[in-house]
Amino acid sequence: MKIESYHFGEIVIGGKEYRNDVMIYRGQVVGWWRAEGHHLQLRDLNWLLEQEPSPEVIVLGKGRYGLVAVPDEVVQALAGRGIEVLVRNTKDACEAYNELVGSRRVAAALHLTC
Image (cartoon, rainbow, N blue to C red; front, side, top):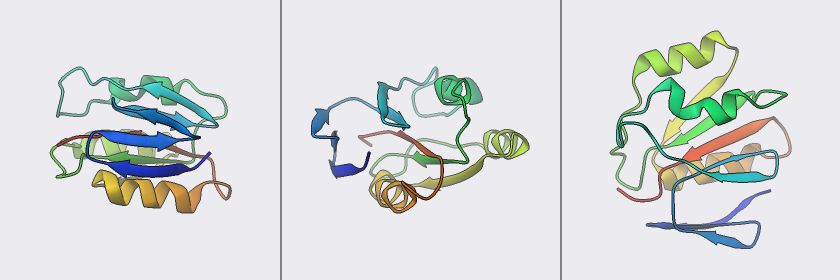
C-alpha cells in the first residue's frame, strides 16, 4: 500500500484521507500518538514493534518542518532489534516509504503537521 499524497496535516493512503498522525505496516493504517508530543520514545512505536513479522525498516516522518525529536537512543534500540531506521521530514519520509514498499518489510510512523 503506497502513500498517494501528503500535504501539511493530510495524507492519502489506499484512497483514504487521514488528518491525524499515522503508522503504516503491511496494508494497515493506524492512528499514532506520542506520549510526549514532539519527542519520540521507543514505546511510541509499540504497535509496529508488536507486529509479526517485524519491519525490516521503519521510516520516521518528523513533520513538515522536522519538529519531532528522534533521540539517538531510540534509533539505537531499534537497530539493536535488527530494524533499520530512516529519519526524514514527512514529505521525504513518504517518498522513502514508497520507494521501499514491495521490496522490503517497510513501516512508517508519520507526523503530519509541524
